[in-house]
Length: 343
Image 1 (cartoon, one colour):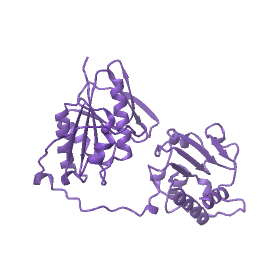
Image 2: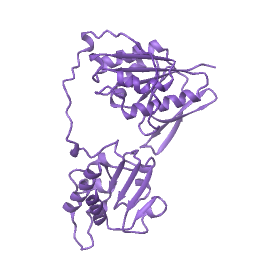
Image 3: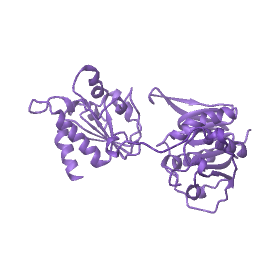
Image 4: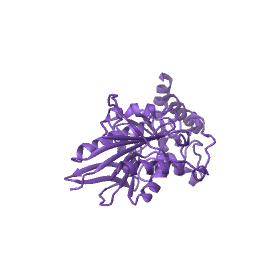
């Protein structure tokens, strides 16, 4: 029986702390360590200053810990990140590497796996251990199909999706990190990070870390009780609620498809907001569906939503057939406006 060496990798954020996805991945790595009998557990951190990150993971009970820090590793740059992660993986002798599926790691991890002659699976959504065999779960076709995979090749790199595990909350403890030196020559500085450009907060409607997902359906663009279409009012009502609640904005396929059919649409809505069978499968603690029918294509996108609520005037809609925890039989315009006022 092969004794696995599990390596948990994480990168510090700009302020030196660990992000939520990194803390969730640590919980997953510890759970894997618990299930794999006899496995050793190691930790590796990279970043400009990893002191705060080291404190956050100090209570995880790692057998060995490695750190690579300094100005050269403060920014997300493929060449320097790959060199640092390769050094940690070689020093630890890891056979299974667990890391968060952040944009920084998703870019560099495949290259590190290739350098070490390993294999990688990204966007892992869970795992199980049968005997000494590790199996992972990974979603395909917008999470509509879940596959169970195993590999004999080592090292095996796994990047865990956010929302699969709870955040690590272990108590701080004494922990010694071995500092590894990585020479960063001119060949690793060909890419220079000169700053960040980001949209204003109120211009960003897709917020993966939001506690609430607000989904708008095509009913917002239909004739209302007075027989008229109120597109401008609908736009103000939707964005007013999203901004006040700090929610992430989703859309049904029917609504975003209107742009290709020559109808009036919301300027702030695109296919990137689409939730469902052919859209995204987000993970939020709560979801509120408004003016959506709630049938299979849409509900598929809600499989990982914790608490489901919906607003619809039709008491026979799909949400009313046991697919929602709570259904508000009400006019979405009136109800959402009232909640926004309360907020």
